[in-house]
Image (cartoon, rainbow, N blue to C red; front, side, top):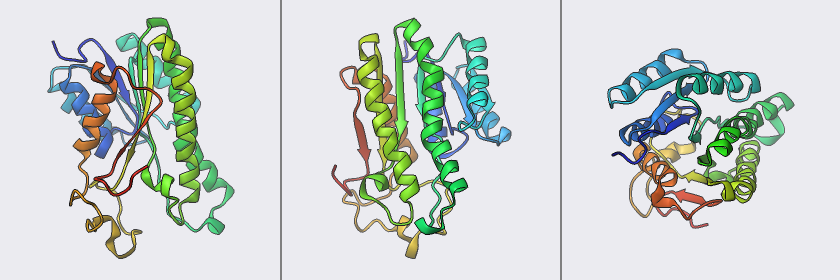
Length: 249
């Protein structure tokens, strides 16, 4: 029997990159999956098709996590098809790079809405079912840049550090109900993101990474699977920094 057989996992921002890799790792472990994209139906359906090839059920669903009603609709669909969500991976994010004095109030609300409000919305939708079942696994995402204080991304760093407080509070409150909550903080990961705003190609520079390479999306996906299986049964409220040894926190 596979480790996650009989479980249902919902991964936000899973139409590509890290989210897609997590979906496929979870499916390989036997979990049925809900594939979420903000607006790209084709991406969500493509990843769902890949998951089905691994022998599980998959539901693609387009929803903007910053919109509480869209999140509610997504979880209602998951409840209808699977009876609830056992595993929540809150991966959706945006990472604009902008001088602080040029950040408008609208842009601040947009970043906070996707990164922090979005994490709140999906957790708020998932936990009642998890409480009822007496089982739940939640993984949030932050980023090492938030811990270091990356220039021209203070609005992103603020929202991502808020994730830490949310995770720790939920971990303390719901551990007695067998709901574990942890956080992944990736370093530099090789994805299809736009690299144009990284100075001097800094994203591709591996000179300061002791392991000597960029991270791969599967490095992050494997960590996510570890956090939601019983291999990690005595860990909650913690943050895993997966950065090749670049920084120590």
